[in-house]
Every structure is written in structure tokens, then in C-alpha cells.
Image 1 (tube, rainbow, N blue to C red):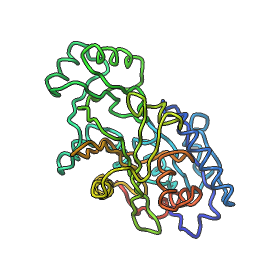
Image 2: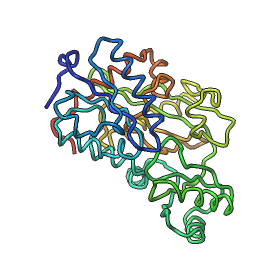
Image 3: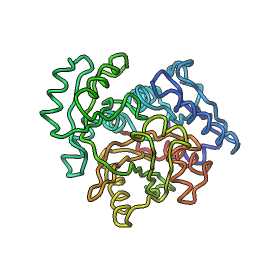
Image 4: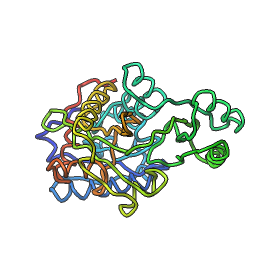
Length: 322
């Protein structure tokens, strides 16, 4: 089933959010904000929490899905494949790009193969002994501190900086109770966390102004990402024009390299003399106070307009997307 731009106004739109991912709260915030923007614009939009409604029940109930899911089961290609099977058009990337973007080791391997700077890394199993994990890190990454995070997670959940063996042991121990199977340890780059939104507007991919963040916390963690009082945003980021241009060009390159569609957000660490890609988000947060909304405002795009642009990505996807 395909939906044209002209048919969107009459379509039954399901804003899919929530689910059972550890990133559920942020997803619900995205879903609520996007649903409100669409209904305020007179569209037939319904917020659907996939923790309460099985996705297979949506066949025949909605004409189009706006994805506001985050994390496991939402950004990793699984919901995309299900919607493809059900014949329900959806916003953003397909199965392959979603899975590649979500699983950071493969994504970073792709970056490295194409000469795109990304921090050195190694992968640890959730059940791996602390002793063998520390030995692997010290073999693969020569210097402390290092950065620890899930291989298939976002929002900086279960992430942290380890300055030495004891810190890494604490992070590994705390991660035992989490639902992630693998963790990534990266070289730590001291700099400004930055992000670049890529958004399809009237059929053309556009990069939004670079957003840079400062925080007094140890790093740009979950609390800082969800509490405006814990961070200071700059859009555009207070960096040299050449570095900002480089980030925007790289974000577009990464989006295309992955085979992403319609919308994404590419995260960087901008240090002195280095601009390294950290990860890509194929379903950026859609809350009014989120990064994509902030970058859109800096580009002169209102929040309701931004949501409409994201919605239209469901109408511009090729007939077959791997």
C-alpha cells in the first residue's frame, strides 16, 4: 500500500510509541507531542502505545504509521519489518538501515571502511567476566579514560566514563541487570557533543544547523538529555565555520551511506583538531524540547512543520527498501 502526499490529509495516522524498550519514557514524550501537532493541524492521528496494542492488530486500523519509537524493538528494524509485512507505510528508514544504525559495532565498521573518523572501540559480552573484559579493553584501547555504552541502545542509558579499572568494573557490574546482550567500550574524546539533523523537505535531503551541548555533568547523559536545566544548547554550535560545514557534509554522507531514508540525526564529538562520528539515530526524538526540534527552529522550521516533514517521509520511500 502506498500513500501519496495528497492522501495524507484523509489518512488514519497511527503514531507508534512507547513499547517495552528501556527508552520508553522518551518515546512516549515524542508520541504525545507528535500526535498533538498532527491533531491540531486537523489530521486524523491517534497515539498508539505498542506496550498495550500488538502491532499485528493495526492491519486495517491505520493507513500510515508515524514512528516515534526509541531503542530496542523500535529503531532496530523489527517494527519496520512487521509494518512491511502488514503493508502499512511508515516514516523513516527501512529494515536494513535501521538495523545497521542501531547496532553500533557494525555501523562503526562501515564508517571505518569508508574513511570516516569514529572513536576506536571493542565489544564486550554482558556475561563476560570482569577480568577478561578489562584485559580486552586494555589490549584494544591503549589509554584511559574510556566510554562504556550498550551496543544496541540509546539515550545514554547504562552508559558512563571509566577512568580506570575500578570504574569499568563498576559499570560492568551495574549492567548485569540490564536487557542488553553486548556493550561497547570506546576511546574517550574530550570535546563538545554535537548533533546534525538530516530531514527530507519537499523531496530534498537537508541538513539542519549543528547543535552543540554543554553540561556540568560528567558527560551528556540521560538526565542532561531530558532536563533542560542540566544542559546549555547552542544552535549553531560555537565552533569554526569550517568544522560546522564538515559536520553537516559528513552527516549527509553517513545518512546516505547507511541507506537511511527521510530523517536521521548523526551524533559527533567535536574535539580540538578532530570531529568524530559517534552514532546515527534513524528515529530521532520528536519531543518539542528535543534536539531535532531545536535544530529545526534554528533553520526557521516550526515544530508542526517539522512533524509534517517527518510524516511525509512515508510517502517518498521507494517501493522496495531492503
